[in-house]
Length: 138
Image 1 (spheres, rainbow, N blue to C red):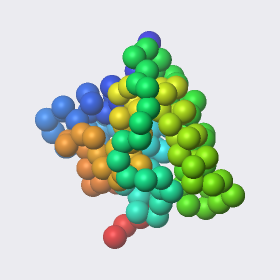
Image 2 (image 1 turned 90 degrees about the vertical axis):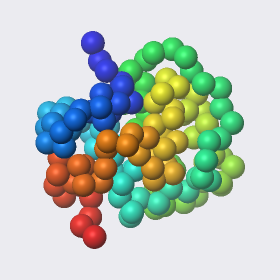
Image 3 (image 1 turned 45 degrees about the vertical axis):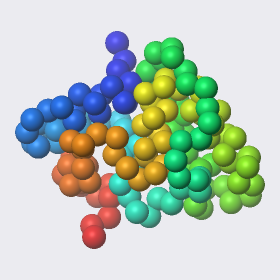
């Protein structure tokens, strides 16, 4: 059974020890996981979307693979990805993405683009320890 990224990160955030969190993230390494964490914590990833929660219809269906399929479209929403998109079109595409994924994963995407971790227990330091080189050293 595939576990959604939100569900996985929620479980990781509840682990007590930092090393357990690092090991869990390392063990469950995937391109979608790396992209989500990089989008949230890498200051060089600049989101071209307004801050906050856009109006969207939450998808209540549990389709854990949906977000895995959507990450390939993130370039549409970041600086340098597709500069030809008009802001309104970009925002509409993001809303459509939010409506295609599970509500929890949509909230994860919103937190990521706002450069916030939706989980207190997952920090930039933990991500850097799990995936050295994924984020720039400051």
